[in-house]
Image (cartoon, rainbow, N blue to C red; front, side):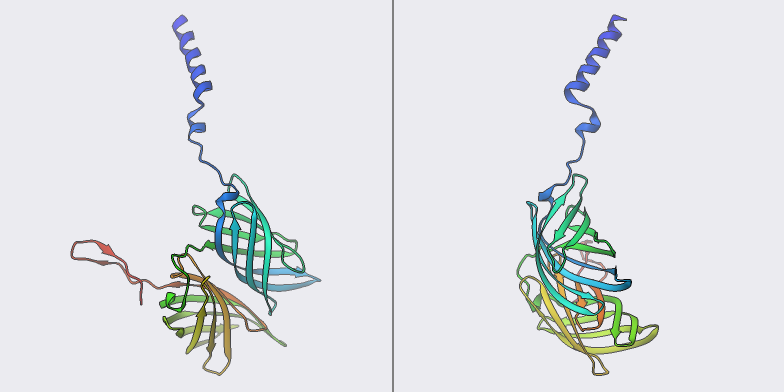
Length: 278
């Protein structure tokens, strides 16, 4: 009995002194400094106001200070009214890696609730203002060098969807396809487009510019003579992935692209190698 009692005392003392194994293995949580750096984002959804349902989409860059302040710029379409905005703001990050941010946009502030993912390289978020039904995604920019037109080189797959409002003509549009760049500001495109279910396959060309912060402008002329302009930005290392939004008045069209990669091949030494398509 005395031996058993002494064992119990030692066990209790050990737990008090060193804590439980679960507590010792607790994973550190998130904080303000979890978000530090620049992220590209895009979102789309609806806004209910004045008994009407507006469509909205936006693409932009936001930079987090690591101490609770932020700055950003985006291109937004609200039922076809295109607006380019710059803003400042604040943010908080909870220990469980959820958080909230306020963008001081005009005429009213934009509030965002988010969750930090993938070792702080990605976020999912929703606009948290009354009337919004809008979700989005943000990915970190990790540039190894400033961007230039040669940074976008090769073939990319892309997909866009959204609405258009041309007077009495209102519809839903999807387009998806492939574009290939020459690294000198020129692009060739092949896509499949649907206007309210009416399908068309097209081929056309265009041009693009790219600023050092990996934002740019795309311009194309469709086979029927209509022009097409879009603002875009690149995330990650500035090579493989990006977001874009059409800036023609009367459109709420946005999407994403990603570089096409060749299947893995095997070297003479038996190593698997994957190369990007150029």
